[in-house]
Image (cartoon, rainbow over all chains, first blue to last red; front, top):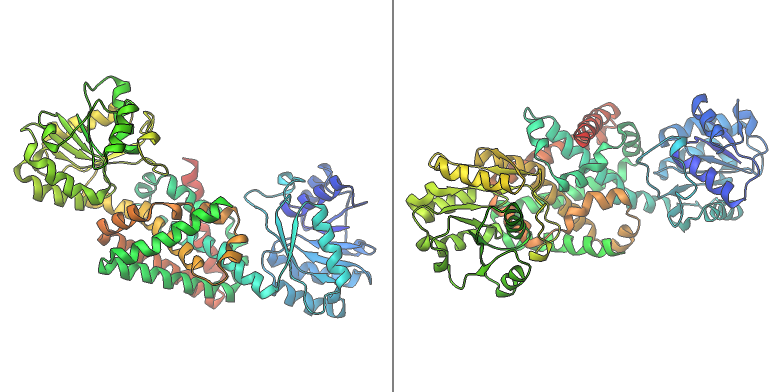
Length: 281
Length: 281
């Protein structure tokens, strides 16, 4: 097996599969030698690929790089893929990765299984990797019409061996759902903090912020580069979510402007109930 | 001392002052007999006032009811206040409470010291009260031009005895700051969750929400009635914050629409740096 990008996700998958005893040899591929050496020292990978040509013979190639790098990784490995090599990815967006893979792989795209493990990423790098990361977490697979059933089943079994629950879903639907429950909240938090940070009295404002602000804005501390790439990769779905969110903010603003207590309470109650019910799960 | 509203805030203040040994007798005043009986059983108050007339003779009256009830409590106690009784409050908004107090108290307004302890309120009721709640927390006092210096110093000393750090600030500035760092985040979270909850496929969307969503929306589980009242009480400042926030969301939307990676990264980086720096404090 080959893992391109041995950070939190790639490294944790390696650790989980090794712990489950279902892989013989894991070859690490990456841009930074230092990261690969670290992953090898931690026992996550067995070998470091010095060139993409070394992936020949692999049964599975997992792309666990940031989404923005997947196209160039695909280009570099495409000439070296074996006839039966299954390629999969762990990117947060799916339609754009699928479009790139279809274009680059040509007929071999039938062996490509698009995927997205739903697991936290506050920390990063191989030293953050742990075998338990995917335990009982959802992994969404988005096979296309051309996707080979056996390839899809192989990737599904791999994730199940890592402890995950596999869900299959249309890629467009995946991107809409994650635009709503993940990408939009990040943009909304970035917007709130940047708006505040840009003020002359920003320090005074921040000094009175309390625990509610802390929770609400935690995700604004996420990697700017990663979220720039995710936002651009899921641009269409995210623009639609932004429009819906601004529509709801307009509704609240109008109710507040009119002093409409009932309308405000209706919106807040629906939200509060939905959040409390979700929190119970 | 009299405390009107012996819930989390009023009850915790009572507990802290008793622990500090700086009060003789605390009389509880409230709408619900059950809550007062509970507060008495917990040792937070010594006596339950059967009528507002019983507050005569108190050195300090603390209003710790929800903001929307303060006007009616002030009306009921005004005829019974002694010449030297200092009245103060613990409301989340200040200009509206000040306007009501000035109108109702007349010349006695000089003994009114507007205040706001910045302490969490996830739980409520007298059983949530604890003496340590205000330890090292900010309490903002907003004395007006007419406010008697001795009254202001008395309330300041009371909060310091409860372990708090007292900050004095103009009421309008208080309301602007808390509109930005507390009230707006609550509205933004309510908006996001309600928008999602209103969809036909809401359950599917919520089922894929992860830890980022959990943190970002935690405050959307807050009391709808309390936040309806706070929003209306701080309407002007909050409308201005909503406009600024929507302006920033428009900026992000425009950058995403144009595919302007640099503009997105600039905004996300400023926010991420500001959030990480604040988180360190």
